[in-house]
Length: 332
Image (tube, rainbow, N blue to C red; front, side):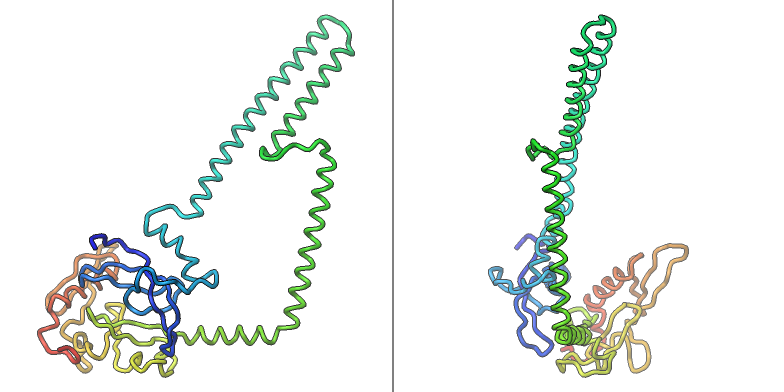
């Protein structure tokens, strides 16, 4: 496949005990340094198994608002470079506002023209001194038309103007009272349900909260190509991880690289209690100048402003064979 753009693919997830946890959606990206596709976490936040499933695999994470399917549209829009649903809706509303503004201007022009006509008739009445009742009736008719124009300007264009406005207003008031009464009844029903099932709902919430606190937080090895990972949550809380291979025993934190190194590759950055042959150090720039990550072997990263860029450059440095100068445990 020549198209290397990120895409949505189905992936498999498992529970903390290793049991299947359905088919979810994840973003698959092309990693040029390995010449392969790689997937991340599921859109809903669950940890996913590496590798995409066949494209026609049915997605099972569709139950609630935070499911993978609920995020599909926004991710597809972002990956395709299309505007979000909110932006499209804002564009439609702006067009509607422009149309209504044009209608308001038309009605305003009609009102001005009718006002000028009424003024001319009044001046004609004063000049001729004719039948005041005739002129008065016409002037009042024009004023009524002005009031109708002003009323039509505020009435929605997609609704027919009612003959009896007062009756329409009364209907709206009664409908509003019915709506308020319905909302009150719904609240009373919800309150009664809460009073009736408070203990069960509280227990369910506490169980969900506890399960959320104990969810694995996996951290991967910094060594290029290493797939080992450990449960940071279990390690910090002093618990045994749900999988033996997620144990944090022997792992080392590398603060300079904002990551961790597994026991198989810890010799790259540490030998016993001493610094390893490739434990880098930062040379921070002064007054906002870029910083450089320097390796004891003589390698230097390009000047960077973001630490993560230098970390990835260090990984490329290790992947190029810099760490092959001395044998590492677990590497054949």
